[in-house]
Amino acid sequence: MLVRDTESLQVGESATIERLITDADVAIFAMITGLGHPLYLDGPYAATTRFGRQLVPHALLAAVLEVMLAGVFTGLRGLPQNHTAEYLAPAYVDEIVTLVCHILARNAEGTLFTCAISATRQDGVEVIRGVVDLALEDLPDAPIIEE
Image (cartoon, rainbow, N blue to C red; front, top):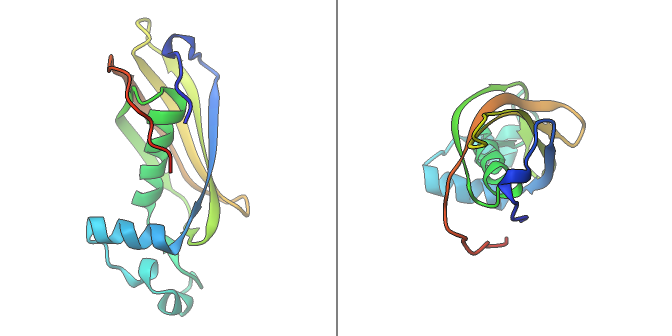
């Protein structure tokens, strides 16, 4: 992850990450949260539904978006505050999702950013669209843990 000088963040700037969401990712997320829906955990079951395959929980995608907001843009100093999101379509297990954050506004103090966020499947279908207020905190430098 990139540690940024948050003073240099400007309106109009964007960050993009790609993430392969695997069956193991979904299984670990389900263990942590207690989410046990077979659409997320049982490929053969999901194949019999209108979706035709195993889905990624939207909450897991939202968590990956938070990783981007806190890490890529702000070097672990950004904490999402208010947010809204539309869940437009499903994302599928074992596919790459592209997540984008675009700075729309910055307060005069440079401590609060309003950002457009989106997530898109590898076939180009947008799965999440929203807006988040990202507050910058005056935190000490922290070690960055890579995946």
